[in-house]
Image (cartoon, rainbow, N blue to C red; front, side, top):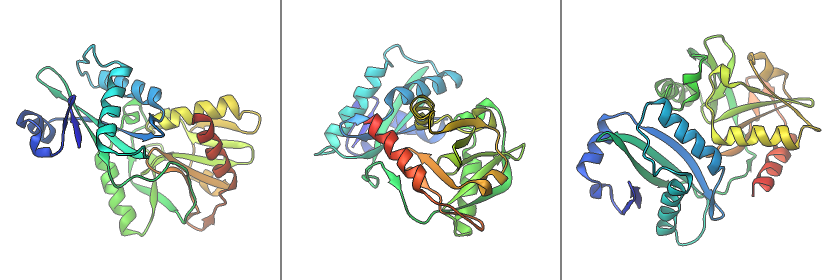
Length: 273
């Protein structure tokens, strides 16, 4: 089932032709969210990111696009589609239509797994063919989609679970799957927004929580990171709304533990819950 601009439809064929034409031919903005335990995780952070993206892309934002209105559109679809509360990833897509905005919301039926710390073999390497521009436009998820598509093919061809992207200054940016965190002693290093990484809602929530509640244990530093920081780290974690806290097990010839990152992420989830 799909929420098409406020109307629930069961098949794509029920979407008005004017919508499908715009979806196929016009630029759109997408936000991935997770619905779990009868609520939208990190909804406040997601909402402000959505509105900021729409403004920066010069969309004419309707007055009705309040936090409550958009949240209701999501929960209406979830309740109509799922018989019991589940953990599910949601795609909220916006596109221009007739001097205004239209949206489509869909559920990822393949992703019903609960959000948690993931412990399984996970290999990384660098993608060095093309660099991300280190400026604020790269914080938007729409900016580097072609580069991400090419890098995903590279990872698949080389038997990798993920790749770390570099910017034009040869510094770490993020991985194909999410935000990057390097654990070194009592420090947690993560690329700054100035490096060109995406300003994901979960990144914002996790960084704010760590600085506020874990400052006695860890010093979270958002800064430029060169690739050597990966090999200097005891643990590396990739954070995303789809995978949760994914512990990296190996980068080239370096193997990592996953004890502190797992404890920290589970503590973060307990607080948010």
